[in-house]
Amino acid sequence: QMRLVESGGGLVQAGGSLRLSCAASGNIFSINAMGWYRQAPGKQRELVATIPSGGSTNYADSVKGRFTISRDNAKNTVYLQMNSLKPEDTAVYYCNADIRTIWSRIETYWGQGTQVTVSS
Image (cartoon, rainbow, N blue to C red; front, side):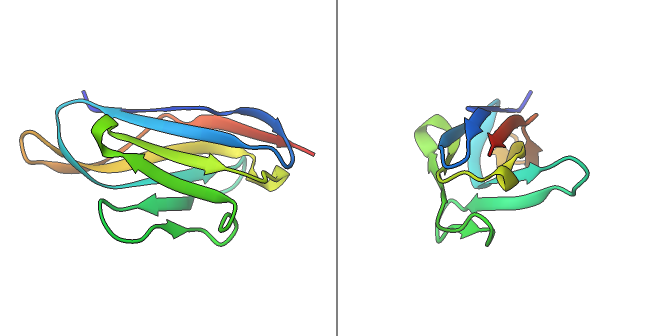
């Protein structure tokens, strides 16, 4: 069973920082792009940041300059460093990854999400 497990969410005051982690496990041959999305109550899920296996990263305008996405390929893990957090950042954060299994299938997988709450 392929799994993505997020961690690092919690409650923080405005201006604070959190670092989210997402580790992939299973019959992994390779991982292409990885990313972070978020969904606030009553709103659609939106892209936060993506990082391909090579090339430049991509950020939503609302988090540009405050969030940094990175990855550790040896650990099959993607991170999201969130600084200068605002109440508007409150949401459930989900990671995803495009993974090729050892049977050569390429599929997009999602984690179960981790709650981030920013108080003013």
